[in-house]
Length: 166
Image (cartoon, rainbow, N blue to C red; front, side, top):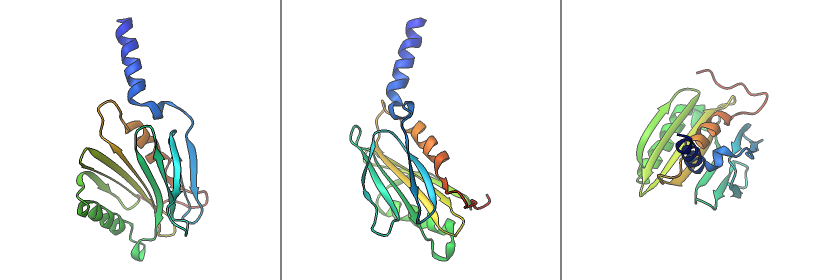
């Protein structure tokens, strides 16, 4: 019984390597007014654009990519902005696995050719939106569930901005 517990503990640590570490680092975007936590092992690849929309990160150990960015939805319509992004993903041959859209937040994910992505969005107080999109190779030994959960909880408006009501 003790060996089984030890083996299960070891396998759990292998399945959730980045989530087990506590050296996450914050990313704040002053232009759009949002913050999110970046998991360990993800290194800044580049700023998403010269105008301060966001940044992209890459994890060398598993090839995962992470984009964080802000958006100014047309007419401040958050739900339409999310629907447009989901449509772009399907046009890019992603098979949608899940989507949930509310006036305050949205989550959606898809799969294509052995890869998976998960995206989370929140409406910000000025009518803009903040997103993160994590893409990774599907692998039975590696789970990003813990990372995604922590990032989704950490994606929030900066101080002074009240999120839109749900």
